[in-house]
View (cartoon, one colour):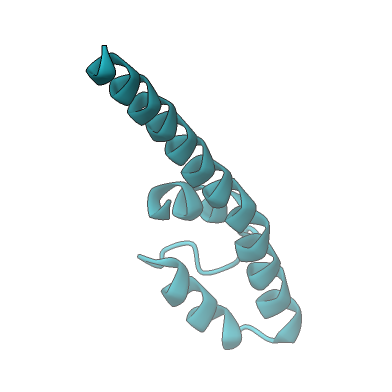
Length: 77
């Protein structure tokens, strides 16, 4: 989830924002010094990226659940 979140977050960062940060936390901290409007834009970029990360995790869990069900059914035969 971290890779997906970071990728989406980096893509959604406003142009003059702290794009050279090594993590979402660093970007959010650096944006605080750029003023309230820029900080709000960076926070919005982060919160817009969160649902994508959760969808990826949900998809992975669903695929693993299907694999487990198939595995248990084959084991009972």
